[in-house]
Image (cartoon, rainbow, N blue to C red; front, side, top):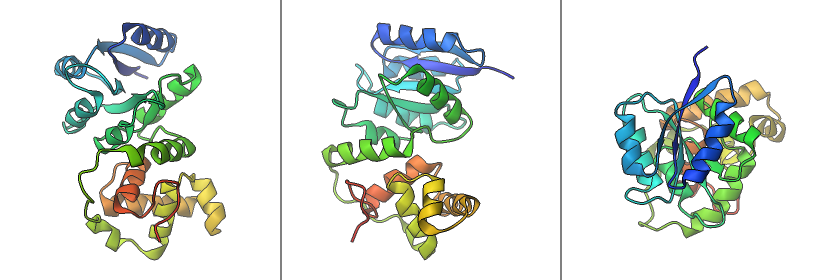
Length: 226
C-alpha cells in the first residue's frame, strides 16, 4: 500500500521538524514537501504530488486561509487540515469555508494527529464533532462580517427529517448520537447524511457545519435557530 504523502506548511521551522519526526516513524506516511508560507506552498505543489497538507493559518506573504482556497479550487487537490492555536486564531472557521477538511490544534497529541491524517486521506472529515462545535462556538462571532449571506437554495430541497439530521450534525452529534436522539438505526442516519451532502453539493460533515452556521439553521452556542 503506498504511503500517504504529506506536506507541512508552517512558518515555524521547529514545528515542522516536530511534525516531521512524528510522521517519519509511521510506515504508512511520508513527508514529501515543506513550505514556510502560502506562496511557497503553492509553488511546491505545482511539481510535487501530495495527498494531505497540514496548513498553518497565520503566515507571511500568503496566509493559510487563502492558500487553502487556492489549493482546494484545483482539480484533484490534496486534502487540507488547518492548524490553529485555538486561543489566538479566530480565522480557522474561514479555513473550513475555503475548503479545508477540518481543524487540528497545534498541540494535538501525536496519536490524534496521525489518526486525523489517515481519516482525511480516506475521505472523512477529521475533526471530532465536539471539537467542531467548541471551535465554531468560539470563532464564529469573531469572524469578519461581510453581511448576511442568502440562505443556501438547496436547503429547501431537504425533507423535514433531513433538516432535523442536519441540525444535529451541525450541533456536533455523531451518527450514533443522532440515531439515539431520533430513535433511528445508525445506518439510516448515515443514509440521511449522504443525501444531505448530495442535495446541498457539500463534500463532508465539516461543510455541513459551516453551511448550518452561515444559513442561521444553527447559531453559535450549538442551538437551533428559532
